[in-house]
Amino acid sequence: MLQRNTIPSTPRPVAVNGVWRLVVVAWVVSFAILLFDLADGTLYLGDTDDVLRALQIRELLRSGNWFDRTLPFISMPEPYVSPWSRLVDLPYLVVAKGLALVVGDEAGLKAAFLIWPPVMLAGYCLLVVSIIKEMLPEGKVLGTPVLVVTVLAMALSIWEFSPGRIDHHNVQLLAILFIFWGLIRWTYRSAVVAAVAVVVSMAVGLELLPLVAVVLATISGSWILRRSGIEKFYAGFGFAILICAPLAGLLLIGFRGLTATECDAFSAPYIAGLMAYGVLTILTAALLAQSGPRVRSFALLFAAFAFLVLLAFSFPLCLSGPYHMVDPLSRALWLERLAQEHSILIYFQKGYFPHLLTLAVLMAVLVLASPVIRSTWQSGKSGTPIVFAVAVGSLILACLQTRYIRFPMALIPLFIPVALAAINDRPRFAVQLLAGSVAILAALGWTLHLAIPVKPGKVALADFLSYAACKDADMSAIKQLAPGRVMAPMAVGLDLVTHLPPGVTIAGIPFHRSSPGMRRIFETFVQVDPHDRRQAAAPFDYVALCRFEAPEEFADALPLAALSRGGDWPGLIRLTEPKRQLQVFKIDHTRFQ
Image (cartoon, rainbow, N blue to C red; front, side, top):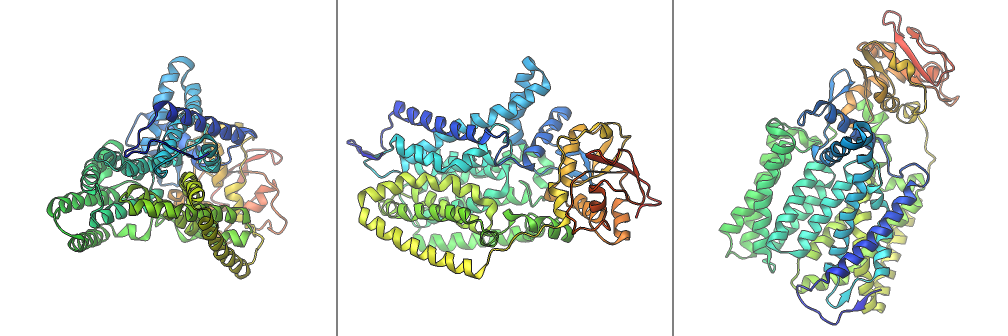
């Protein structure tokens, strides 16, 4: 519960034992949440990215080539180069190498996948407790019951740290919390921590780019307004970004990566943008130290606009976004059919009302916490209001594209203790504020519900290329193949990878950089035109897929429908029995239809 603290001070003293007690409580509750996730043997958030990350780390262990992120088992037939950061691979590599001395390479790697995410969770809990204690109004302390409620509200983000959840999103959550910690402390040293975390967040993945932009803009805005303590923070933040951005580039992607344009990964455009911000910050801090808000705002906005125009002309390809390489066919049959790539309007369309209720609760937390944030801003403190602005931005971002839902689920519950403090101080006003917000949300939600009626999802044959996997199938036929390229559905390809003999590769995986391979997969399995089908299959030697009961509405006139039922196809020579789950064929290109 929230109680009065009898010794208010600024900065407030921290009882070390009390902090660690709360951290232990947070970690125990979090670990219980992890156990709940593991209960059925399947990770709630587990997805293709975990499989790909494991394959990337295995390849790094095999080759030892830090800067080469080519995955040799994928041939589209173009080489597949992963956009993912070695920074995420590094701790798994270190832990696996250490454990390999005792249990062997394979067991060591598997253990590393299970051990490291919960270890990161301990750091996550420490940051959560530290941030909440700093954000609470003067005279309030964080009680155990409130902390437990807060951690439970973060369940979705905590599942990012489940054993085996080795995707980069858990590192992103740590990075954004380090940014928050640096902002709330609002010192020169914490500015350096926040700046390093900004660079790390960008190096790990670009999902946080919009929120990083909010951080950079609000810090600059605080400097324009000459907020208390901003001068040292601003200079330290800009200097650290200027140093860390190119250094991270050299360490993670090498000199060649520093000059490469990869719009979906940490590369020249983003490093240049961060360095430009650092230069701009240092120059304005030095040259306009005595200037007022008007001069500062004009100079900063003019220079920022000039830098952005220069970046746009220098890297025009990135104006098309990170998915510019996805061809129209792959976009239509794969990308646009992913719910995470759409706004929350898809929740109305699919009837995902619990998801909408969750977003409404998150919004209510922000509304209830807003009076405290306003008072904090008026008292001269800038860090907590900036953190609040980023949390609001994360909710807006999730509403615009649902793939970002993990961020508000991690950031907004931090304000639950603040919201409870506001209710405790002014209960009547809090009720009025909440009632007005609920009325507005209910009216908006009902209007959208009427405008967007629930429609049952219509399954397309192409959908089975992403979901019809066969993890438990007998893979012996694959292991006996002579060197060559295998045309297989994306999901099946992921299951085949660990069983491929030397010299055998798959066509593609369900990932945007694999668009050339996915296009050939779609054209081979579900396109009507035989000419396009033959051209798509020309670079490949085999076809492999798993049997599944395709709905009767899909005729056998398409290869995927026919082969999935155990049938044959002109030009495909059987290498397995029709009744086996895994179907493997050799392509006779002279007869292939």
